[in-house]
Length: 382
Image (cartoon, rainbow, N blue to C red; front, side, top):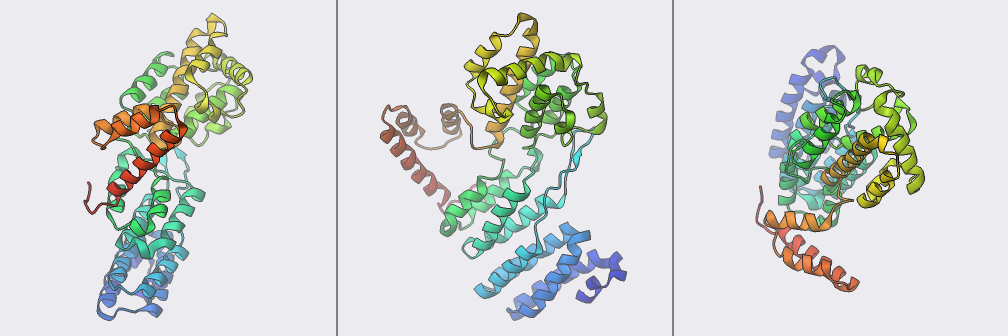
């Protein structure tokens, strides 16, 4: 099987050979245990297959790894993990967006994340190097997960494994995933805000209409960057920053000097100057009442554009709260957690309302201990 995969002239049957190699090697591990030399040749074959059949190669990697972990040979597992990391990571490789609002992305990216997570779940204590490698790759290469991937179940599987010995690493890893929400695509306030801003231009603003449709059809963590790019476009009138987020046809239809940009440009430039903003992301830290106050200083003739900007900033904040764990409304978040069954939230609320910084800090630390006990409990959660 290895010889077939190594032979370029037999590329037509490489994928089938990869599946058979996967079965054979798994059987050898079960029968003989240590297969160090053969493992090296196998990973060379996987490296070749990764170029043409990455998803099949990742499936083989996961199956082989499962058997190696079952061998309970820590040296063998360590060798396998070193080979796995050396095999490389499938980056998202975002190529743009289609007219149907679909992000063009490397399909093996998500498969790679899942395969490594499944390997780690076999024995997290022995997989510290692989956890660290996954953290580094996600931070350097970026991460793309759309709502309909339903990645939340993967987080549950991971947390159900024995992560106690690697708890801090596990926290670092899980915090990177933009999946801590219940509503798929734009629902609730996200839908209301995106719809209202689109209707204010009677769906004539091609850029805002595309944003609305994508958030309703295929919402994902890249939408935060998309909204920031729109604000930057309104400020500079330079369409270059929109290129990763809209298809060429839509981009051509957007007019920097058109009626949907003219008023917005005046508002955003004026807002940046008056509020002392350096970057569009600074809007996430700007108080909403303060933002409204700044915009009230502009002429009444810009009333519709003021409303559009307020809604776009609100949409940005809602997306950020959905996909990131940096900016959030603590009181609302605690109340939502209580409604979903998280225990002793009343204690946390009381601590956070206390005027003493020490009491607030102690309350948070005590609650973190409780959450750790829940996460590490032997009970499995769906």
